[in-house]
Length: 456
Image (cartoon, rainbow, N blue to C red):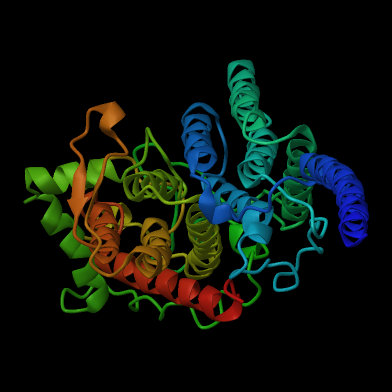
């Protein structure tokens, strides 16, 4: 009897276990199917730092091509593009950078589009969409061939990215990057760059004008470039605070005066230039090449490639340097057309008596003080030093394509000094204009870092 009861109990247990197994076999399959469908729709949540900088590097190359082949005036427009394109890139990928934060709410721009909580984004795709939109719209007057190249690059990158993620994540990422870029671009259109009062008569051409004021210079007598650029809204509110350099030396024809010595130095140097100094002046002439602060985009791209930075650091470097150079040139131009200091060629010819003297190349059409190249270099130096260190060694290969020997440096500080002095060697700026311009750019960059918090 006992044996029979044991067999019955064993049979019941076996039946119960079999039923449970059948039930358990159904539940996981359903759960896995649901999880699979959810994963297909949402994707994996990956941070920006896990991706390479491929889209940034390729779009920097494209941007440089557009600069070389598209007529844009005034040249400072390129620095402006640099700042806003960097901002759009950063905002398009910063949601995937948990240690960093959007600049929305810190700048005067409208609120940026936001991501959908809990949904994954493919950050290279967002970056590609943003960079394509900004370049396409800023360079709207470029050639048909260049426009086709913009489309081709965007499509090629998208084709590769579609292999890395699912359709839902890809589409969501494209839409987010484009929405960010559209918001940044629309805000950029309100910064005053297209002021409707282009007529400008240099005060130096007015009857009974004081001596020493800027006038168009020989041999080509270019008109005033960007006389109202200093009125533009800066990207960072308050970035120009306390950045204006001291007044230029008081005009004088006395050989013992600081004004006379500053101008005479340019002439004296021009008579004793070394081959290296002549090459340095030619290298940072940026014509042909990358004018109006665009040379810094080329240097940035080379450093990012050399360091093989990830997408997060590349976006941070792009936005910090871009904003700094853009705001620096607004500050520089504000002082230029307030001080209206003559170019060295005017004083050297008219006061020093060297009537046939010429600079190494034509003097640009704007006042001497401060130097635009130097102001941009100072701002760039501060940002790049903060990102890559005090004693960062690199070689500038920007003009390899023109057959110019590359320039090597042991720090970004050495670079900014070299850029400033290149303008003195070229005969188009006084040393004081370059040294004070560098200081102005540094101050503006430090202001930006103190007023905008990138890290949470």
